[in-house]
Amino acid sequence: MSGTVVDHEIVIVGAGFSGIGTAIALRRAGFDDFLMIDEADGVGGTWHWNTYPGIAVDIPSFSYQYSFEQQRSWSRVYAPGRELKAYAEHCVRKYGLRPRIRFGATVDRADFDDALHLWRVRTGAGDEITCRYLIGATGVLTRPKLPDIPGAERFRGQIMHTARWDHGVDLRGKRVGIIGTGASAIQIIPEIAPQVAQLVVFQRTPIWCLPRPDAPVPPAVRGLMRLPGGQSVTRWLSQAFVELTFPLSAHYYKVLPVVKVGERQGLAHLRNQVRDPEIRAKLTPKYALGCKRPSFSNDYLKTFNHENVTLETDPITEITASGLRSTGRHHQVDVLIMATGFKVMESGNMPTFDLHGSGGTRLEDWWDTHRLQAYEGVSVPGFPNFFTIIGPYGYNGASYFTLIEMQTTHILRLLRNARRKAATRIEVTAAANDRYFREMLNRRGTQVFWQDSCALANSYYFDKNGDVPLRAMSTPEAAWRAAHFDLRDYTFESTRSRTANADRSLVEGTVEGA
Image 1 (tube, helix red, strand yellow):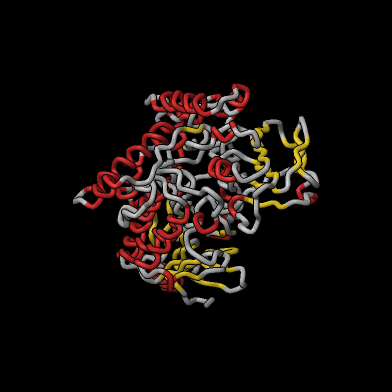
Image 2 (image 1 turned 90 degrees about the horizontal axis):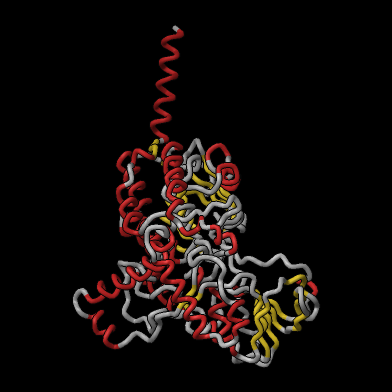
């Protein structure tokens, strides 16, 4: 496997929707020599690992799918998690990807070989796989984040993270504590509240919760999708809704009044759903809508009307043998659920493995020095032949599937051009990367994130440098740029041309010496 032989032209790390979408795009473009590697024992990524009660997509299903592989069988406007998992398996079967996936393998490290223009990928099993191009498709909802609370090792009950749900734990009649009120918690809390004896919700920061336009997909809509062009209509309406509720409202906050309208709707929803004014005040965000990703639910807020549900907003000081101690009191629990999200803009998650580029430079070190950045969210100078689906300043907040298709369009333009030129090394120029990074920083002025109130949001959008590495543009602009970026922003080089140049220099040197 090792040495000068390239085992595969392309290695894709990840078999979630990023990896699946990338693999399908490669096959359709005639790039058939690729291998997908995933540490799980099945496909789906987030939808393989996350199986907690109530899990569902948080944008309409008509948008949460590939544009080229739309299906009519979604049971609801917001599909449950099991249907997303089934959709992933369907795509793998239809496009013949399973023989190209290596399951149960963890990528620990990848090193770029400057002389041979290839990547040496090392797995947890100790073997090495070589490839010309390496694509990071591990997503961001990959590595569960555990809270740094003292005493967890003393707890005598059961602890589980939402991303690793233990279905063997029976919650019926139990005293349950759940830490966090983000997207996962909003789905879990209404599901488990009727089963448990007591539920204590530990909230650090309230989340904006808006009404969710969810329902079983009506027969009329199913009928429309069977008509010529009908599926396009439903998808267009869904895409417009998604675009309006995040990319446009977040990135053009000072231009469009969408956020203010959403805030009024969110506050009215809160008033209608929560009876107790004191609890309602605790659930009211003190930051602008959009500082962190909002959630949509018709059941979450009204759960706090139940007598067996307690909202605790005092900070947790420690985990004890029998529960949790907050500033005000001790809460006894039998089961502790960590709804604390994932490492998103943090070390160890972007990427999930140790990546060393040209000259041995470590990507995490490069980002520590230069701040999180990547040209069009795809490439980083000094890391040739490496592309990422969700790099810094790549995702604008729309459907994740839209991102996948845009980034694979970008990557395929590079691979096709390399084939035409017989090139074996593709690298973004430092000048192009710097230009794009400056552009993203200069667009901050219209974004919602830079209001003073966002400092109260505890949002994972902000990295350790205080940046928000989201792509500050609308989806149509991002899609256009993926298809039209200047190829001269990259250098294309061949090992053969380097060898020929070296030989020519040797001959010329001999003549001159004579």
